[in-house]
Image (cartoon, rainbow, N blue to C red; front, side, top):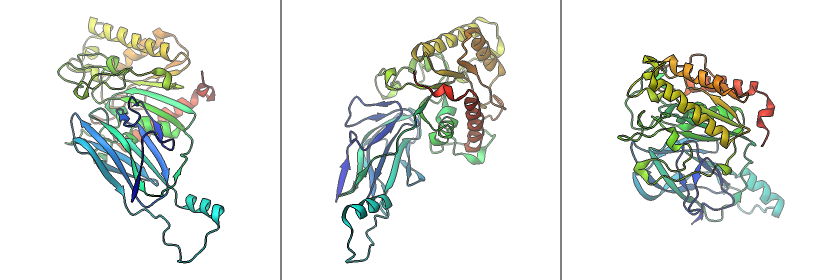
Length: 373
């Protein structure tokens, strides 16, 4: 026997830019988005419906501190088993009497399980969440409170944790893969948030540039961060775009980590820094940062790229814009091996180092940056 914990249950805790247009079937789009449940009982399943654009798609979960992943079918509503052998305390000696309320409270605490279901990947897929299936009679418990600190990241595949689990390829080009190595939990973005005890909205998409008609995402038209930053849904393969309501999440720190994919198909910033295309990019980047400043007037904004190999002129351009903006709450941050760390995606140990450096920089800005508007 089982019972379903529906998506609108007050016992569920959500984090991330999630589409709640249908509260009975919220849609997860961005990496690092999650839903958490604390419960008692001997098993837990998930009820989901995948919408695939490319690659094989996987969901991540952390159950009682242990991380795992589960592969999704391309389409269709399914119930997927996460665990069936949880210790539910049913092995107490026969005939042992329990002291009503006090003992029941202790029992529930002893048998408490915590499940965090999260989106490992970017908008190579989205999925609808229809609830958790747990043991009939399971007790639902209040989840631990979310951190007060809030971070938002605008980034590309590195910020999404793409190919992060290919740890045999540290400092090397990517191996052949079909999405199985991508894990947002090991992105520098989520690592940094955890180190700072902060919530995270990770607006990250593999291949995304700043400007449309460049980069690697959504061929043949190609769209950029200027197209998706204010959206919930944005992948044209998966449906019509939907706007995001910025009042729903107010970050204290905004990290803008784009400017690496704009070099495709032409690395104009490297070839002619003073040329018209490079000047246009700087103007558009400046306008984008001003948009974010208008949305978040009190936030600290950190401008960056990553350690993924790219020409230093992109960081020079960002530094120039940073100085032109002349805003005391806008900072240009460089990693110790910025732009020259690896020709491939950032693996777990590399992301760990990046997050150490970024977290240290954010701490150096003082505790006052975490004050609400």
